[in-house]
Length: 296
Ligand code: AMP
Ligand code: MN
Ligand code: MN
Ligand code: MN
Image 1: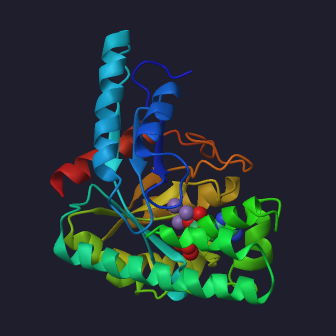
Image 2: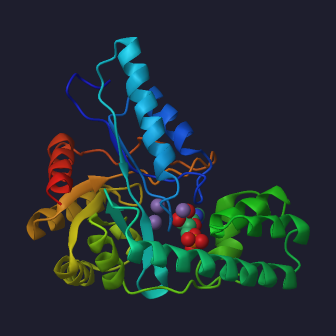
């Protein structure tokens, strides 16, 4: 249970505007039910869900007020950009200005690239006789089509039994239907978000698969471009990883953040609000983030 004054946060969520399964309104309602105090919508390469997020957040505040529930609720606008080698370096931009022209241009290009890439991936699946072509083609109607959509279509056609299996067999890097995205350098992603007034955080650093020295070097390089925080509390980080990442963040003077990367898929262990344990400074860290965004 949340004690009065405590925070309960999840600063990394996806909605139907990218590859999540719930709308921003549904995410807000779920966050309300869980008693969360702060959430962030971090859709891949799009800010289109952010106006609905603001409406959802307002609805949660109104509902809490009506219930006599004093739990505060804040929903941060954010976006998650794929960058760096293989598009593996994911950069989060909290509190961004969604109308920034350079950001808009970058998101337009990403959308175009997503469509072209999905067509290539579907071509590879069809050539391998995997899935039902008509079912698979339906994913192309989505302007923000990603591998998660293809994975779910493969589950639906019975080609695989889980999304994870679709990635492991066909869609993960190096698998038979994988096609890389066009990617910008991580420095460029940081610059674009910085120029759009965002507070910039390196998402799920453990996913990069770097050793300590290489991660430290990347963090230094990105910090010079404007990186301000590390997503320490993410399900990809085990106990030891969390400790190491937190230490790294403190040593480099970076903010510590956390989020579940919730997409709404049922048969995974990811749940909204479920973060690795041990975030004892959550309130202080989130307040520092809020202060940095206000200054930003
Ligand atoms: P995309 O942006 O199309 O390259 O897809 C990346 C998204 O696919 C990630 O944000 C996850 O939602 C999902 N994803 C990537 N790798 C895996 C994996 N190995 N298992 C399950 N989902 C994955
Ligand atoms: Mn995703
Ligand atoms: Mn990511
Ligand atoms: Mn994500």
